[in-house]
Structures are given as C-alpha cells and as structure tokens.
Length: 228
Image (cartoon, rainbow, N blue to C red):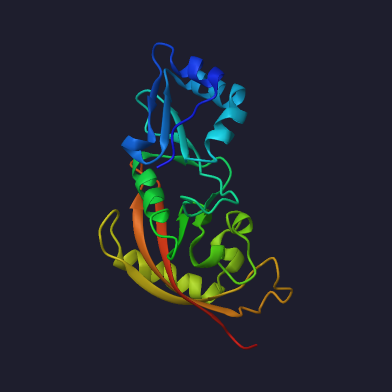
C-alpha cells in the first residue's frame, strides 16, 4: 500500500476546523470533505495541482459536509508497474453520489472486466474502465467513449428493442442482471453511418443514485468484429 503524502499547503488547508480527511486505508481512496460547498470549490480551484499529484497514487473524492455528491478524480496511471490500479475514465463534470461511488469501486475492482456506466436521462456514457486492454470498442480510446451517447454507436433497431426489453426486466439496485446482444460501431472511425461492424454481448443492471437519477451499469462480456 502506498503512503499518503500531501502537499504542505494542502495539509494546512484540510487541517482547519470543519475539514475532514479520510485516508485511503479506510475507504480505498482519499476523501476530503470541506465545511461547505463554497470551500469545496475553493479547494479544487486553489489546490488543483496538489490534488493531481495526489491522484498519481490514489483516487481522490472531494465533497463537503452533509452532501452525498463528490467531485471524483480517478487515479492516474504512471509508467511504474508497482501497485497500479485499473484505469477509470469519467466524463466531464460528473458528480458521484454514494451509490455511484460503490459502482466506481466495482468498475475499479477487476482490470480483466470491461465496465461502462450510462446515464438514462440523456443516454450519455459517463464512465468506462480500462478492462480488456483499455478499449471499449475496437479502435476507440477511453477518452472518446465518455463523449458518446448510445445513439452515437448503437444500431438504432437494437437500441429501440433494448429500451423496450429493459423496462420490463429491471428494478433499480437489484442483484439481477439483464444480458443483451447488439451491433455497434466506433463513430470516430465509421465513415459509413450504416456500417455497424462490431457485435457486443453486455450484461446490464439498473442503478439509482439515491436522488431519482437512473443509470445502466454494463459488464461487457463479448466483442466480435463482424465482416462487412
């Protein structure tokens, strides 16, 4: 386990009354709780470099007292092979509640499993892990995939059928998974908009973030190139 080393200015700030620092030995990541929302944003703005350096060793969650939402800074991968954790790529301005932090822990738990997280209100893919060699679709970098919505890469007929079937099969935060096979494409590479040259098999479960926002956690089981 790596030692927790903090920038001296950051130590002074989080040692003030009303601040709480949770070490990684307790949560598996570093959590900093500010006294209120204003000082939470102040910490991000004024100590961003120190938090980025800390994220080379641990994932970091910054929040404030009595709020379930946090700003999540995933651990950055380095060239060292010692004690590395799986990659997690998050979209911009993603706020994580406690139920979603548990999902993040699942996504970081096994680098051999490829996970994705989709927000249902806008079908945006907000998180993808580095399982299966860091690729979600053939030729797609993780940074790209968290800018996509489902309609960008799913075959339309498959997406429509999936949405009908999923509503019948799932209840939030249950242990039940729903498996689905569909055709997809890498929208960054597919010049032909009708060319869905990848077939995926994915297991899904429905997640409620505690505030009524629903998500699909997907576990990607199979990815096959389809001849065109």
